[in-house]
Length: 447
Image 1 (tube, one colour):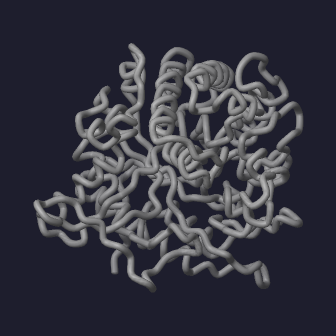
Image 2 (cartoon, helix red, strand yellow):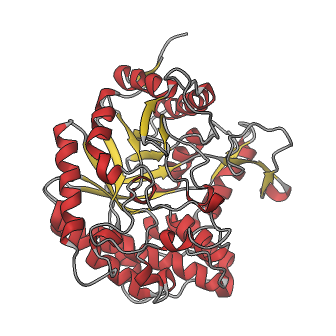
């Protein structure tokens, strides 16, 4: 068996998010985020776990970057904490928060690691949620100030900016199903409005990078596309899967790339469609330099009556991780990027998250043999490599996650890291998957 090689210059990295690793939730002027509040709601998070300490990365970042570099990682996707920079969501800037990220970037530079900065990874300042959060337009306006602030502060240090992470999760799952912060269940029209306000915020962020970013700065959005994989390669099933892909992702990708809400969107949403103000769609559809895709799972599709997409349910016993939602479908890393490219054009794509979460045992004699994670990631990467070989413009891959961290409503039980973290002692232990990924990076190939 020959190594599966990736294109020359392919970007390899790891990813985390500020609320999941930093801790110091109320230190040096940081205010509460919606997740700080939500985690204290009885029954909202497993075991009542909070983000107060997390991985204590706020104090331990320098040793974390030394470990990262020892594993051969040169690209790191991180996020900044909005309530650490602007505790009120808008208005006065918290200089201690700004200074913290300067220290962080200093350390990354020292260790030869390039930052890929996500502006917003779900930690909305609670002060803004008290005013209505993403349900109200003023949150997008506040985000404009936040984006201007951070790009001005760090524009000479950051080349790659990601505006928002996974709109579906902080809108649909935050305001529709209530399973994520802020834990609300509002009307379908209000949910669609949260999508729209998030897209407006994205537009403000693109503008901020164009106005204040350094020469050569790049900006894009990260979307957790719902991937619809054809059950086989029969043309009718491929066509049905492609149609299903567009319909499943139409609330974000259509306005982002076409500058309009299409007739298909109107048919799907009906009277619950988002309300749009003059100039919104032009702002939303500004040219991006790349699109980030967070892809973990999806579902199989075949052509039903009249060629209409038919979703196939997973049978009992179908392989999955310890996440109830995470069925293992390696082909999603082939079909997701392929369908995006075919539907919306050849924009550079990056897999900004992919990985596997398990409830693992602690290290034994300094080792964690996470063969399940290694095999899951390797199988997905083989599909991604096949897509690149066919010319799909995937330019990089960021493994989620660098280390075990706070896994939202699953608390600290669910582990996605390639580095084990003992949350009691904050001791980091690279797993077997980390050693394997080091070789993938080194050889730019699956070995």
